[in-house]
Length: 337
Image (spheres, rainbow, N blue to C red):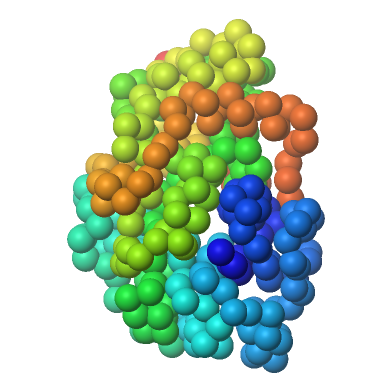
């Protein structure tokens, strides 16, 4: 197998490149060379994916059996379309990393792979879409839906669309799990979002990488929700964080209504917490039937702590600063409970 990874130097792209090389595949990566280090053994190609001349130069390094695109999160659909069209003559398949945010019903409703999508043209620019008053739908979701349409227009039945919810694991750049790990290591009374038995569905980056590569070499097409089929309760998640870090903390479970009243920002100040009914109700049955296998989330927690303790933050990223509640705010809320 010969594959092209759009990105390939950090988090999911890095794990995909490493896993592909371990399989004995030939791997080309394409990026600007600004974030992370090239994985040893890949053929790195430098360039800007929004520049047509750079894309044409990249195409000369093909052909590839598949392209795996991990680097389109901040791009408008028209740029995704331009890359897909430019590389289509040089690639048999395109595996696109998308998001559950493309669904009309997320995060309010339980979702399947057949749930309705947001509507966005394949050639839309960055101005298309809107964010609702309650935070959904989002401009990001519209843009990613347009990106999916762009890939499908270019590759047809050879397009695979992977829709993860939250990806955790070694190399995480957003800061969700690292924040909880640092907080539990610090110990003391820990503000925890109730109910404690709420199940969450984060998926390990290594399992997403493996599934993406399996799809690159397979024959399936269309969309797959990539969420943990079993999940874990928030209580067990925090217990795993405490166990991994050796922290002596004690979670104090707060009613969601209290957290909302106290102005705690959902999804960020207490990472992974959100009150919407569908946020952790995303069915991944089609992906499981196609071979998705997810390790226990406690293993993800343990391995992330080992990586974090050894290496620290992988790259500077603006989303990092969004995550985690200020100690003073947490203490004030704990005192009121």
